[in-house]
Length: 308
Image 1 (cartoon, rainbow, N blue to C red):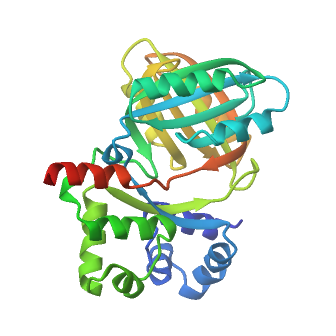
Image 2: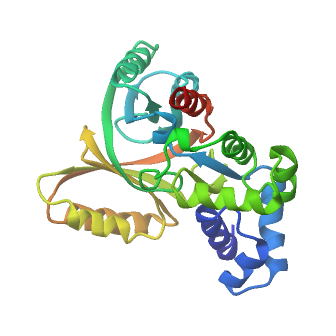
C-alpha cells in the first residue's frame, strides 16, 4: 500500500463520507488518483465505511478490556470468544498473554457473567480485566453524546441503521428509504455526528499483522501524573485507540507502526516518561473481529418509555 493510499484511508477514518474530490483536494492530488486507489478497496470489501453509534447511547455503560492467557488452539479460542454477544473487538497477540478482547455491556453483573464464560472455555488459564473510565482516542468513540435516547425519533434510528450497513449511502437513496427529503436527511446526519451520537469512518480489513503496518498494544501502569505519558501518546499520528481505566493497567493504547524502529523509539519514550512505572507491549498478530454495528432496540425502548 503506497503512502497516498494510506493518507486517504487515514482521512476516511475520521470522515467516512468525504467525497473523492474532497480527499484529492486535501491530499494535493487528483480525484482520479484517489478513485484508482480507494475505489477497488471499497468494491472488494477490504475497506468498509460504517457508522458506529456511541455505546453510552445504547445503554452500554460498562466497557472492558480483557487479556486472556491460553494454551492450545488460540485461533479457535478467539473465535469462540468472538461469538459472545458483548465482544466488539478480539485479536490474537504476541507475548505472555495470547488474546485481547474488548467488551461492551450494560452492567457489571453482565461483565462478571462474560468473564466467567471466557474463563470456563477450554484452554483459558487466566483472564485479566481493565474497566475503561474514559475513552481518550478512538475512531468511533468520542466525547459523551449530547443527545439522549428519547430525543431521537424513528427517522433518526432508521438513518443510523442504514449507515451502520453502508456509511457512504447516498442521500437520495436514504431519502427514499426513510421518507424524508434529501436536505432533511442531510440535516439529520449532520446532527447525529455533531452531537456525538454517531460517527462514520473507515475500517480496513486486516486479519494479518502486516495488512496496514504493525499494530502494537501498550498497557501502562502509572505511579504519578498521567500528563507526560498522554503527551507522548497523543502526539503519535497513527494512534488508533487510547483509554484510561481501572484494573490491570491505568491506560491502554493501540498504535500502528511501519517499522520496528518506530515502535522501539516510542516504547523508550514511554518508559522514560515521568509518572510511568511500567509498560507492557504486544503485537496484534491476527485481528479476528472489529464490530461496530449494534441493534438500536435499547434506544427504541428508552424512547417509548419516556413517551409513556
